[in-house]
Image (cartoon, rainbow, N blue to C red; front, side, top):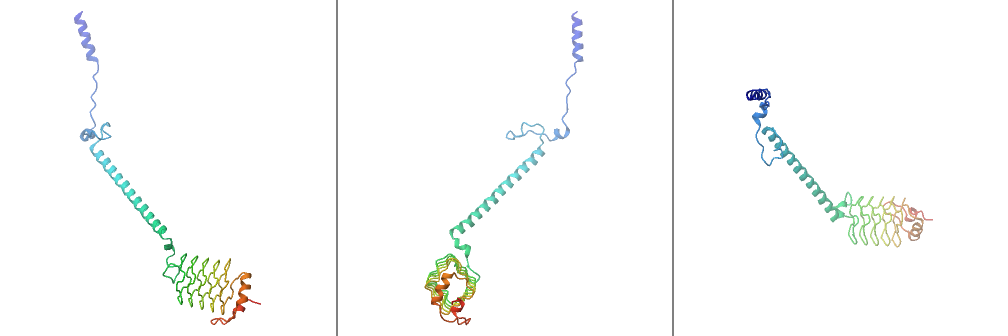
Length: 237
């Protein structure tokens, strides 16, 4: 009976299939190597050394690209900040030159008492500037802008002011003797109160009626350049 049980036991054991051994692929077996403990991929099986080198190279290239973009953005931000700082530090830099014939800043400046006599200042920009007692005698100021400027007591005698803009300007007590103002603008609250206008030419200057009436009371003389009588150019009665 014991012999029968032993026989059956051995026979049953021989019929149980053994677990098959699966060989590694040749490519993996040839290139597999343990990953360093610090690698985030140490738990992933069968990563080849070659693949890890490629991955590390791509990672390094990405890092350099990010650093390069960061440096470029920083440089651009710095340049923008520098430009803004310069502009805010000196707003007059935006008007450097003031006009095609002017080397200095003339817009929005206090130029009281400055001497511009006999200078060529065609289309010069004097907008909103303070020009009290400034000397423009004999200056060529064709198309110049005196918009909202203060010309109180300025000397504009013998000046060529054709097409100049005196809109909203204060031209009180100024000397306009023999000045040529043909086609100049004098809209808004432009005032010539107390100014000397002997020989001035106001042809085609759009004056407010109250200003025209006042100037006609003091108008006299003939402009030496155009030959026009001041009263006639003002359309005085």
